[in-house]
Image (cartoon, rainbow, N blue to C red; front, top):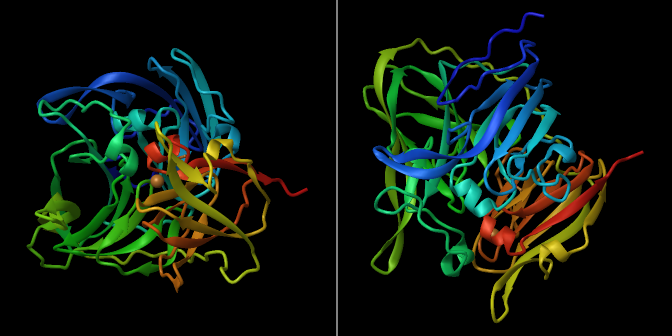
Length: 441
Ligand code: C2O
Ligand code: CU
């Protein structure tokens, strides 16, 4: 069968596909220590997939089969979790379902891509260090009717804590790093500290796929010199674009934007990250340019044709389940909790497949939590008592300090699934539990 080529995506790192069948993406993926330059000219010992961080981009179509021959060349066990993909739990990289791959070991990940969208992959073992040190990559899945753009670009936004010589700062597992997660002191774009740079055509209508892969940082983003609107979220395209000039993305979320440069515009297009910074006794958001695109050339804009998308209805009958996130301190440690206890000691929640459930997510403490659910999508209904407009299917939602967020989950994918705070320090200190979706007969 003739399959038309997928559009090229700037900054995607396309690996060699070992299978000539256009409906199979077969790759080798090796996790190993390597040397990377987060800051140009300053080599740092790091971890990477196939020597790259971000690792190779898995770029394929809905319905394609993905085969990943994974080899663990680290000196510690690991797994790979395909963040956002609604695949079988046996391939999800959750350590309770899949024994972590020992050093020198291999694992065959194999699954069919269920949904179009922008996704992420990363280890699910010793995640604080393994992700921060560089083990992560992106997944882009095209649907049967994707809109066409002048250009597509991929942005992996991250932060990292470096020493003056550009090497990764030691891990503390204490104090503020446990309370708030390890915030970096250096923003990374596509794995590098330098802002991205390039050109963009006047009149262009582009698609920008943005992933926040940081350990704990919410990214607040805006655009200068062009306009943008959100056209997709974690779970793919929206029915209608969401006009929002400044967008906050929590850890693990993805947003797809339509970016429009006016015809005849000469002003460079800047992607700006508003970074909370202590100034005196205040925290202010300081704008930092993380990507700058000079205008070069002109294209005659052609309107992208969006497929019609319907989100599952939200006004359905649904059971209610409360999940509280909290913490307590013992003499020796802080324990983050799910429903009052270390989530690893909690009994698995159980839900029947295909029955929507309203999850009331209550954050009972000050620090925020990016709440992530494996294997399912949900929609956000409420923050506090207010109905929110945060449209789209999600697998990750931000719970601000002391905030209650109500989401509607669909639980259409059976299996044993993790849910946890995506600040790995919180997760590894107890804010991580499992639920089971029992298959409908
Ligand atoms: Cu990004 Cu448990 O996941
Ligand atoms: Cu948390």
